[in-house]
Length: 193
Image (tube, rainbow, N blue to C red; front, side, top):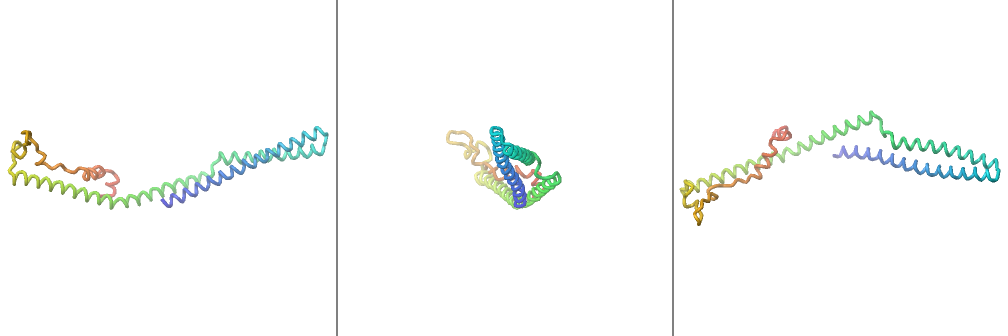
């Protein structure tokens, strides 16, 4: 994840720089709009006072401010709408992200190997334990107590109904089931557990 986090940092920095630049252009545009208002006021004042020099000064300021506004607006539009990187850089970043993610996934898969082997080992031990318990119940029931038929007195309850729970062991399926649910997954097969 460290390598992917570095790319994330680079991409975030690009976005943050663009956002700062956008804010800067918005501020500049507001300043230029104020300059346009001031220039229009000068022109109006010059018209009222018939002041040619003031009118000339106002017209010059207005012309400069309008062209500056146009330039800032174009730059702002580009920042808001154009890609921050070239097609080649995009392709490079995309390949790099995919490659690093695949590489890190492979490392994670390898770290799973020991855990999956341990789960398989525990599941096998649980299966052996369950089989052993049933074998011992069978020895106890058949060999020791000679319970070989359903209606044997040891299988009857106080009201006379048949209860075979003492002669059967209910396997603990949770551990075995946990492994059996994942043993056929492509990842487990690929890791050759």
